[in-house]
Length: 209
Image (tube, rainbow, N blue to C red; front, top):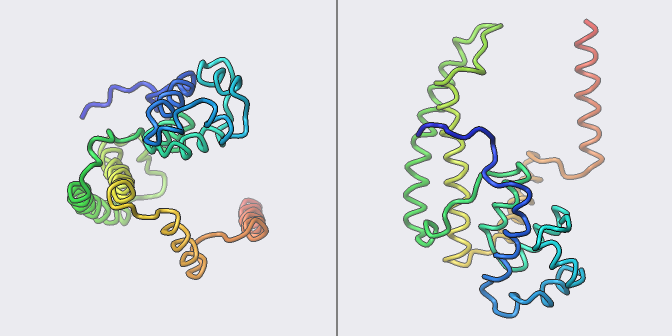
């Protein structure tokens, strides 16, 4: 597929109000469609909510995320994250209705990603110091396969949550506990500070040599 985009994001920050309004008006729970309910749930006034939806008042990122979570709109949530440069554009929600379809797609994408990983691993042994690979079209196309697998993973998780009612909060909690036990994540801010300090002094020492 040809790349015709001239900027990395599909949506503009000016569209956040429309995204949030549509998410509220199309909420599955009827009571959550009213401005009064949403304003009370968010802890803001109805007037401020109206101005946010009209695009005449700025909305903090955290409030926009909470808004999407209240109305349980995964597509709107992905749109907001994409605008802030934190995620890919959302997949068409109509494609997420079938868990088996998403699982089959994930398997297909995973196989392709594994082949690319093998190819890049082999290539890594042939790279010489000073080689510039940043503009290589073949490399960019290969890396796209990892973006595909990331999107496929998100689609599987969303489809499982929506169709099989998998409790993703519990899944994430369990994963975090296991990751802490396996020491693959940073469990505290103080430990993060220690790690950054260690990296900082190691780089400074290397630069002085």
